Image: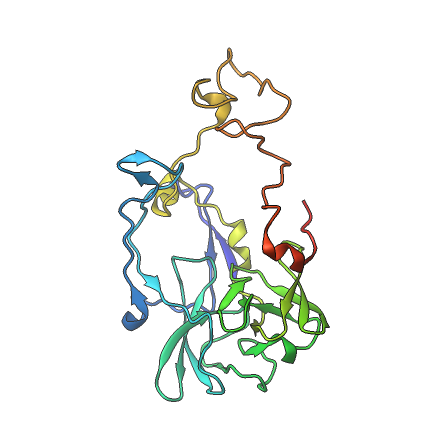
Amino acid sequence: MALRKFKPTSSGQRERVALVSVARKKINSPHKKLTTGTFCGHVGRSHGRVSTRHRQVGAKKLYRCIDFKRSKKNISAKVVNIEYDPNRGADIALIVYKDGEKSYILAPEDLKEGSFVVSGSNVEVEVGNCLPLSSIPLGLAVHNVELRPGAGGKLARGAGVSCYLMAKEGNFALLKMPSSEIRKVPVDCWATVGVLGNADLKNCKLGKAGRSRHLGRRPEVRGTAMHPDSHPHGGGEGRSPVGMPCPKTPWGKKAYGVRTRRKRNTATKYIISRRVK
């Protein structure tokens, strides 16, 4: 992956930094049988009124159906294309199995066109292969990790992220999450070997407000710039401070340093170490 800084030929190009993928092939359209339409006509609104701030419809796009379960076992598949997916930060790979079936999977960092991947309990531990945690050596980076056996991958699916297999204790494996949290996951859960690509996505700059609107984001206004009826930080003469012991949300609750996790969350018993603040 590489970052491209644009020449300042216009105001929108002056600060723009885009991600250039070497492995990604220019595809005019995705595989039609693996896509589905999504209705996004009421994003952020209910009965015409804004119900979720800073959201809008954005550009029209198709949803790519990703095989998070890697359900075809012990059948090798060839990587045909590495493609862009507008619904996620990481790239996706179009694979073709020996029996002719096609599917999309998340593309790890070192997966290239022409490579072969396979899913199974006794396959080689290589990038792109899917195995149960019990068959993966300690210290390896994995992504698309299941929380329950057979439920499909839920953890570590964003651009440039991965989990690290730290230990195995009985029926559980200890994984270090991208947030530095350490939690227990059943060893019967499946995971894919490797780190997801597009790690430099966090260093990109859109350059202009219009690109942000295409992604479905509406402008955000500072609370201190609002009327006091609209935000607790609002009001005052000129540039005035917050005027209270701690920052508040628009609804009057503390904004920073407050735990929001439910105390009765049943998954708390699987967390060994909480994430670093």
